[in-house]
Amino acid sequence: MSHNPGFLKVVEDAKKQVEEVSVEQVQKWLDTGHAFHFVDVREDSEWQEGYAARAEHIGKGVIERDIETKIPDKNSEIVLYCGGGFRSALAGEMLLRMGYKNILSMAGGIREWRAKKLPESRP
Image (tube, rainbow, N blue to C red):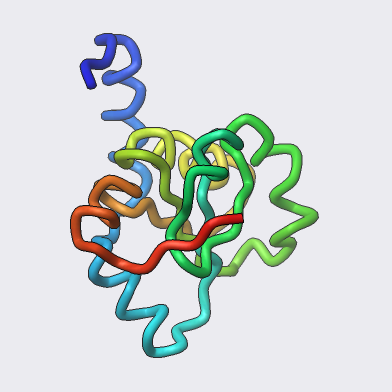
C-alpha cells in the first residue's frame, strides 16, 4: 500500500515518540503471562475479519474517547497494533499526550503477526 507524504510525515513524527515492540516479543509476553493490555486500533470491519489472539478492540477513531474508561490506570503497559504499525503509532502518540506512560506500538501490525502465523481469533 502506498501512503501519502503528509500521512507518512505524521507517522514518522509519532514513531519518534512511541517505542515499537516486535510481534515475537508480544507473543512471548502473552505466552509468559506478562501483564499488559493488547489493543487492536483498526476499524471495526478489520476487527471482524480476525484479530491477534487475546487482543481487545478500541478503534483509533474512538480510542481518545474510550481509553480512560476501558484502561483507567495511566501507568498500565499498553501494546497497540493496527494493519502495519502506522495507525498504532499515531494512536500511541495521542495516548502519551493524554498522560499514559507505557505505550508501545507493535511493529508490522497484524500483517506481520499473520506472516509469522501467530494465533488469531474472530469475534
